[in-house]
Each structure stands twice: as structure tokens, then as C-alpha cells.
Length: 293
Image (tube, rainbow, N blue to C red; front, side, top):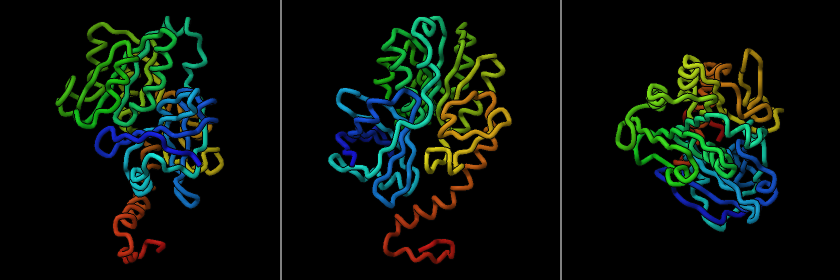
């Protein structure tokens, strides 16, 4: 069992947990993820590793309540434990394979959208600990939904906050901030974008136009995390890849985002039914004719 030693609500429906998982903490690298289950019959939930403490054997996860399983997870408290906490899974960020000396020569830009701030943070922190500065754009719909601002500010070379409604920081989408920085004379050798699929798609369209190589991190529907089930298949450079073993990072200019977003929609009806069963509890009777119970 993997005990929750700290739980914090970062903002509405977004939570942070520190979990005792010594073997995962010892081996994980920025960019990797875990799959958790609350009990032996529970849904497998893939979550990017937000932070880790090798000495204390702790792994930090951040998640948003978007369905039945994550809503049940939000009800867990400090002292409760996960049945499964499997990882580290996936490939580490390409950045960790380069020497600090080479990385210091690069002009690196991170673009984080919403909960995508969580997987961006460990990469920026890893670079900061090795004396590598990176510019970071963090985008959010509103000020209230912004997460990990102080943590990111402590490790970013330059931090640019933008909100869709202009309630905090710069106004507009993250793509507008990229345009503004380039117009101000900023040049970048690589961009790492992590966030909603639609955000990553439009960041990649822009960076391709600007000639900035771009890496994205994909977290589609996953089941086993070993590449056997095929649920997380994506098309990259017209070849089939599996995000759990070939990724989660890919060349953003080669990802078929439209196909990936269509695949995500396949699971929405099933998730909606699961959420309805959770909300209605014993009163749920499956009258729609499509539920299994």
C-alpha cells in the first residue's frame, strides 16, 4: 500500500498529493509518469510525476477531477493509501540525456497549460538545479485556476503568466505570449509544450511557422501502461506509436493531433455514465439502457 502523507487543494478541483513510494522515487526522472489505483477493482489512472524526494521516498502527483475515478480520488485523505502506485513508466525527458554544459548553450522555452504545469515543473526544476535557465509560459483560463506559480517562479529563468480572460498576468492564449516574446527579440532553440491537446496543437502550428523545434507530452487514455492494450496509440510521423512506452514525449510537429483528439472523444460517453453512477449512488437504475448495472 502507498500512503498519502500530504494532500493539498491547489485550486477548485485540482489536488496535490505526496505519496510514499520509495522505489518509484528512487528511479524516476522528469517526464515520466505513474499509474495509480485506489483499490483492487479500481480504474487505472495515469498521472505525470510532478516532483519527487529520493531521500524521503516521496512522489508528488497533481490531478484534476474530470470524472468518476478522479472525483473518488479527491475524497481520499492524508493517511489513506493507494492499492497500486506503478512506475516510473514512460521515457524520461530528452533533456536529462544531455550534459548541463550543452544545455546551458540552449535557449529553452516551456509552455504549460492548466494542469500541464505539473509535468513542466519537474523538468524546469531539474534544469535549475544544474544551472540551466529556461523561460516558462504558464497559461490558465482565469487567475483562480492557476497552479504552482510560486514553485515555478523559484526555478524558472523568466516566468510569464497569461490568463485567457486577462484576470492576471498577460491577457490571452499562450500562443499570443509566444508571439510577443519572439517579437520582443527572444530566440529559442527548443520549445517543450504540455497541456490540453488543443493547446499543444496550436502551439505546434505556431512554432512550426516560427521554426522552433517543439516537444509535446501526450497523456491520452491509458490502461496497462506497458504498450500491450493499445489504448494510448497515437500517430507520429505517420507511424503508430504508444504514448506509454514510446513517449510520453514526441516531436510535436509530427503528431497527428486531430486523430488523437478524435480518439479521446470515444471514451467521453463511458466516462459520463460512470460519473452519473457515482453521483446517483444507490438511486442509479441504469434506465438509459446503456449501463451495465
